[in-house]
Image (cartoon, rainbow, N blue to C red):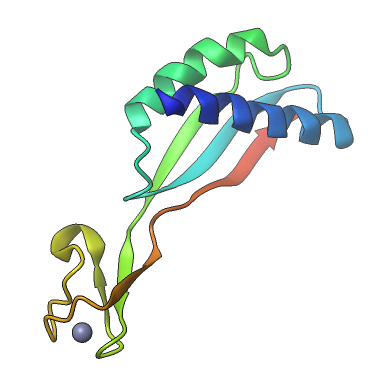
Length: 114
Ligand SMILES: [Zn+2]
């Protein structure tokens, strides 16, 4: 379950940030999660609930997840299309010469703290 590893990674980053900026508690964290990142939001949330209890500064931090749509660009015709709907084959010209443009990322978008 690599979601738990991700949760610890995020919490570590936020603890460092809180230290640098003298924050006493983090109230919420908004994560952007790419549609094809392979991360299951439910697992992330489960891991989060368990892991924040181990971090005094994060104990009450809520996790908000925003889904980022995945987009693929076609090298043959230059058009972009939704990855989830069409996969690796361009719906415009049927080329397989396509590259995922976005949708594989996970970013910390914003945090609320006091
Ligand atoms: Zn194409």
